[in-house]
Length: 175
Image 1 (cartoon, rainbow, N blue to C red):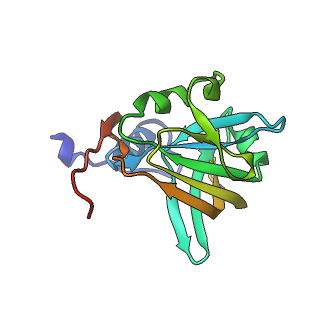
Image 2 (tube, one colour):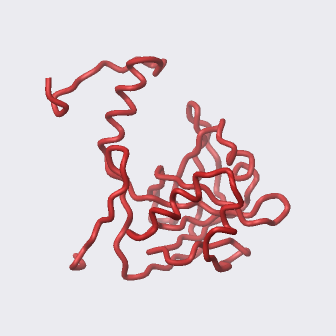
C-alpha cells in the first residue's frame, strides 16, 4: 500500500500503533514555526519552539498556542502573564533548533525588548505581543489564549515544518 493510501483507526487512548498513526497524519499538515517567548519568574528571557500557533478571533484580537503539560517549559509559561509569538523566517531553522534545547536559549541568538519587557527574537518575519487571556486544559496539553497587544511584520518568507522536516517557503510575490 502506498504512503498516500495509508489508513488507520485511532482510538481515544493514542497508545501504540494508533498513536503513531495519529502523529503520522498530523505530520502531513504543514505548519509555520514560532518561538514563544516570555519572562520567567526571575525576569529572565525564556522561549520555546512551538508549531501549534493559530489565530483565534479578530474581535477581540486573540491567538492560541498549546504546550504539553510535561514539557520542561510548561512551568515558565503557565506562570507568565504576557508572551510573544516570534514567527520564524525561512533562514531561521537554526533558531528553531536552539529553542528546542535545554540551554540558555536567548544567549545563543540576537534579541530585543518589546512591550512588557518581552524578549523578541531578531530576524523573524513577524512578532505578536500578547497578554494572557486564559489557559485551557485539553488532554495532555494546555491551550494558551493571548490577547494581541501589538503586531509587527517584515517582508520575509516563512519557515515551514512538514512531514518531520523544515522547509523554507520562498515566496516571490505577495498575494
